[in-house]
Image (cartoon, rainbow, N blue to C red; front, side):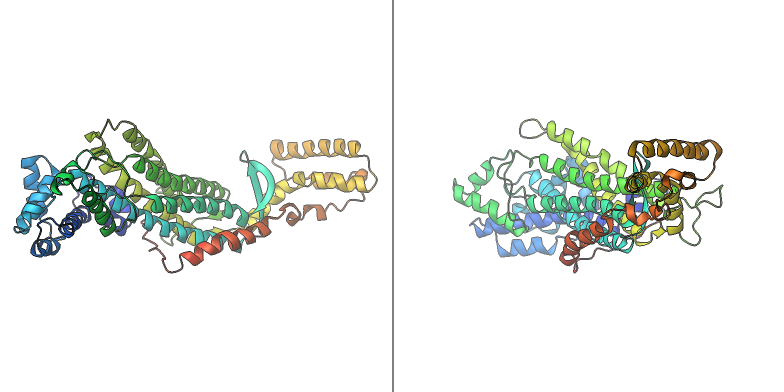
Length: 475
């Protein structure tokens, strides 16, 4: 690794080697060569004078790319695709005359991008399934552990730790559905020619429209796609890029929301992300255990969420059959969106896999607020004992405000229950029983059970043989 030039941290620190390799120059240009092989094979099958020896020569050199030679050609020709055509031709002298026959640059650049995006989506799909599985297990483990719920970031009706985890999990389930939809609907550009009219191929096949259509279908099938775009200009519609990046942004949004929740809960000491034995939380404050994994996950997610805007703008500004102002930005935003989400999901899995819950702290926080939340039940019990609803309501209101004043102004504990216990109007009410937290969590445990059974378990079954590499987290 060179230390005197900028190194992209997505490669050096965050994303997996697998995802980095997918978008590497080696893979990109090997894919170009495989596309040239598929085109030559299909053209030969449809009657063009291309020999077996030429095809064999092309196949023998799909991966041994001389990047120095390609670089020399590009500096001379100022055209990356033609530079690689020449470099390929140097090692395939017999096949040189038929490399890229009838094609435009976007035949290799666009089709390769589609192949790589589909493969990247498949990798992320498997990572998503792994995080969903772990969140489901976490939710099931803490299905019935009552905790304080929050709305507006203010204490609200209790929920359970497990039920809260299902909210994080379900966001990812929805993301998985979208990713799978994108995989299923992603099309191949195919063999469409310079402006999408297939004019050059029509000339090659002496005006035979059927053979040109067959060529498009054959190459599409050879490269593993069921469908090609029905029509294109020189490029496939950049709508596809904006749709894929929107799906990746969706994963980022879900991870950022969960990461923020975890950071808030860790600040309350209710749960904690993994913290290694010799890990340092702060260079100054030695006692600190900062949620740095969750913070990093949010940071990377925020970066990915910023990328769809450029894809949207590129789609909107493709004049007529194409302009080249899409090229540089796509070289940046497509690989980095995939690398970013790869890193996000590696972190997410690591966080969930080692997350620690502190039930005693959760119980203490809940007990501080539970008396206020129990007042409605206490009111109803008082009425059942023969009390006047309006009178009891006013007494509870006054006692509640006095108790809240003691907490806020004097830092005292919540003594509402003691105040009610000393009020003769509530003499017949079981005030101790009213503070049983399990009476206030509704169907949260049963909702967790149903969610894991009906939503998570089918995903586990579908992905049981496709577990993604967990990836290394560099902390």
